[in-house]
Length: 269
Image (cartoon, rainbow, N blue to C red):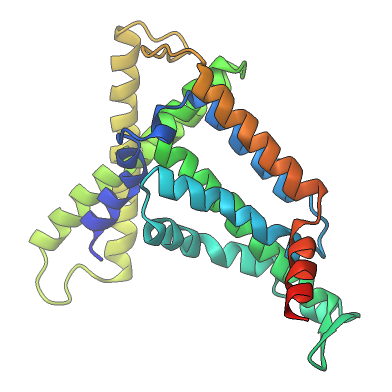
């Protein structure tokens, strides 16, 4: 994958938010609240819980189906950052060796179970957060946070951080293209050239950021970024939020998977 492809792939989540599905039309504040409730519910499970987390994959699966979001795209994004979760729990099987279950004669240690729990929580939280951006856009999420009462300074910093990622990538893409046009064979690929490129990139991005900031000041920027779109919470938004709360309550406080397992076992007998 080339540098240009990486650059355009960064903004694909925002481009997905341009669709016109039921999930995309929901009020951003409702989607933010529902996502936060989902994240807190998943995190609230104990570290040795695995089976109880499995039904929660129904939530992102429904969002992807209704919002017409590619499962492969979300899965690829989750796998891209999965090394962080693996690094957090990879030593659990070595540190927590107490046997808590035996499956088909194979002892399962508590460390293995806690490691699986970390991976499941990671997959659920990251995929749901990505789907929130894919159905709302990152600026839409920030404006929803602002309307929910978060400080303008915090929201503005989030928006600037996201925007300057693209500024940095644009400058890096220009420098890389210039290097490629002036290089032949292995020239321009050494560590000394790489260090010079990093220094040039830093100078250019700082200069570009200053020009953007002065342009914003000339247009009346005073620390807050208002949103032109003003939407109200409708019946569909309340229905979505109520259904989400009911879904989370049922699967958090009731052992649905155990009940299904007992029912299946009774039918088989």
